[in-house]
Amino acid sequence: MFHRLLLVSLAAAFMASGWVTKVEAARWVRITQHKVDLKAQEELIDLRKARGSFIGFRFRARRGAIAIDSYVLDFHDKSKHEGDAPFRLRSGERTRIIARDNGEQFPETLTVRYKADSKTGRYARLEVWGLQSRRGRRARRPKEPVIVAVPPPPGRVVQTDSEPASNETVLIAGQELGREVKTGTIDVDQKLGKFKRVRIAVREGDLQLENLTVNFDDGSKEDFTAEKPLEANSSTPWFEIDSSKFIKNVSLNLREPTNLSSPTRIELHGRHADGWLASDGEGKSFNDGWVLLGAQSAGFVGFDNDVIPLADHGDGFAKIRVNVRGRAITLNQLRVVYANGEEDIVPVRSRIDAGDAYGPISLRGAPRQIREIRARYRSRVIDKVIDTKGPALVQVWAKR
Image 1 (cartoon, helix red, strand yellow):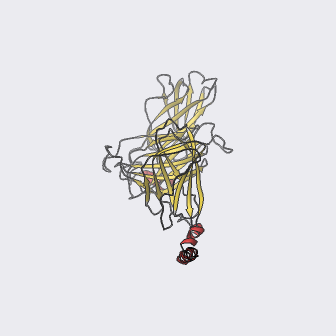
Image 2: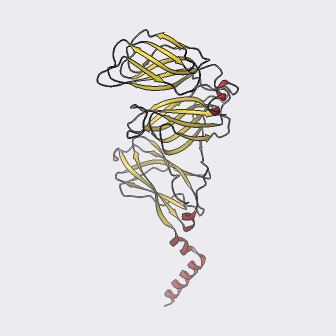
Image 3: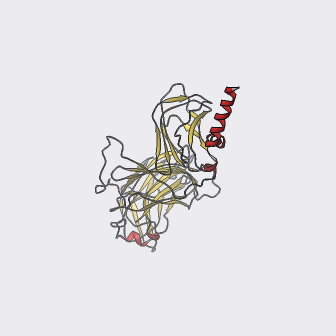
């Protein structure tokens, strides 16, 4: 009888303190289910779509075993929780509660590093669960995006902001030539930029190029002769052009028709006119001050982990944005690598249609010189509104 009275008294005391009420009020919510590629070694999972805030987290493996070497949970307030003890989850298993906090936290990203394990397959599904209180279910995530700062990798030699990496080439436009054609045209976006040199590169197929004509928007043109045939992943020499004019298009004449069995993918590359990207240069007078820094083509199969090299640009920029041409893409991640080796991670899980843009993104500590953009994306195979049969063109623009 005494023990029963003691248990009743203890229960009443706990309820009075609010402890029992708090536990009963909290519940587990699945934040995301992510298909992971265990051969990728490291992945960044976007958690910003999670509704509300959380007081704890845990992981669960589904449809395959997952060997995790370490992980980092980044939160909106720029705090983080790191776990570096390796563990292995068999299919259906889950971790204990992690990142337990009496406060409410808004998760931003989860970086997972996988451990080589012969007992795991190639793919699995990782579930991220959050423990959510009543207050957390009502909480609203702050609207402004948070960029996760990443220090330079240990042991890596980097350059200072005053000594940026040298790169001048910019992908201006891409085009697929049809089967068995002897002419082609590469259209250039209106007032995209002014260039002092251009060249043609072949990415897929061979090209028996005879001559090309650079047509400017004022109606003038310049003709050039190609010296030799182009194989896949090769390019012509640089052709010097009038850098005071905007390119409208480049027309091509071929010695022999293109391949019968498959289309030929070609690209137009250029080097900016002197001073175009400078803070006091002519580029600031067009496109509302936005200038093209670099571009790449996005593949169709899987997600490309691509490096977009950027043209030299003097004293840096304050904002960037990603423009898409040709067809829609799925953008998964952006890493902004500065000239001094520092990185900012911009977690993205977004479809961007052709003609649309993602951003603008304000750069930390602006103005900053950017060495390159590392992007994770793919062209969308199914796209009802497309301008091309080929892959999307992903452009990086910047503004001071």
